[in-house]
Amino acid sequence: MVKVSDKFIELSKSNGREVFCKIIAGNEVFLDDRIIEFDFDDVIHPNWYTIGSTCSNRFAFSVRYTGELEVHDEVRPFISFDGEEWCPLGVFYVARRYVRGNYASIICYDKMYSLEMEYIPRITAPTDVMELLKDICENYGLELKHDIFRFDVTEIPLGVTVRDMLGYIAGVASGNVKFDREGKIDVRIYSEMNHFDISDENCIDYSRTMSPAKIEHIIVDTGKEIIEDGKGGELITLKVYNPLMTQNYLRNFIAKFSMMSFYGADIMMQGLPYLESGDHIFFRDPQKKYYPIAVSEIEFHYDGAFTARLYSKIRTYTDAAEHQDDLSVVLEQLKNSLGNICLKSVNAEDVVLSEEETKVAEFKFTTRASGTFAQADINFTLDSASEVGIRAYVNGELLRETIHKCVHMEDLVHFYFLVQDIPRGENEIYVTMRSINGEMTIKSGALEATLVCRGAAGGAEKVHDREIISEKIGTLNIPTKLFFCGIKGDSITTTEGE
Image (cartoon, rainbow, N blue to C red; front, side):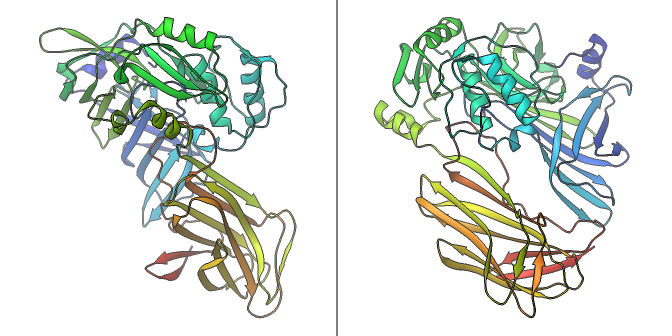
């Protein structure tokens, strides 16, 4: 829970409260007179209680604005109830933005969203977990909020992402990992309940389960063996993948969680901005009885008023297809579960285009199931005003083709396409270009290609937030002209804007 004053808490719970909102985005400060609305999804485990989750939090807002916000600009939203003390909602970075007339809609994620690159350690095992975290922070520009449970790391897994490693570390420490409201890595570990409660007086609507959840049995796939501790049925059993886990650490985990108990709940309520996912608090019902709940996810919405929907999620028989499977099938599903990847490349050398096709971007990846999908984005500038042919191939088959006319030198061109129903196994997506008349050059560093794929073998198992990975980028207001190529039906459309 974010630390705020007693006065702030009192004002937040009062009826007829006044709400102030502030968003600092890049070099721009938006106040209530220009903020139309925002949505903030703070999630730590979107299904049911688990360990080792690495969810990315999402912040989307709409404002009256005609200026420029660049991708990766920092965004910091705040809420106040007196215009003096401000509670931070987090540190986010612009991922997508749309400008229409005098209005802009901005979609942002915290740093977790960008940690899908492969983790390449600069230290060797055996080592200590704090040394491992220090290496991650130094290599990838991160900051740790606090020290965690110390344990020895006898082997550092290879071929995993930074996000994976953070999840493995948090899992051994019997917790989950997220970025806190100041943008620091926060390993949220189960502890005694905070001395804080929300009451029915602050709720619009609410429901809770009749009985509490417990964890008394855990099964871990380390990649080399299956280890377990405790015993119990499906509803009190936790199954995870973690190559850093050992039998001793697992035993400590069970001992720590043997006293754990909380209720499931779904609560529509006043927005209390200091509440965070990962908090363990109490819900007080009209009979003044207190029920412990674990904040799995909390969705904040602001549109002049400030409301929230809080979830405390536990496993029930109505949830899971796992109830119909035996243990061996469940473990196999665990090993083969899907992940997300983001691949990116920039041309290191000049690319000279002629009338022959030249491969300018190539992505190779593995899918573990059929029916997955991917989106590729190619942004580039040319050194001359001419026509260029662009083709996209999937596993050797021509999928999309368009001819784009560059009106001015150094025009920024954006070509993208969505690939659906990718088959299981090894796959290749690449893009070629050719000059229609005369040579032209894409200078070194002037072409950036990105592929975002859902369901690819991008790392070990982890819990992801509800990412939006196929949104169309609208026309942006930047100094150079932009051309956007998109799919409409079976054709490619090209639009021009300032």
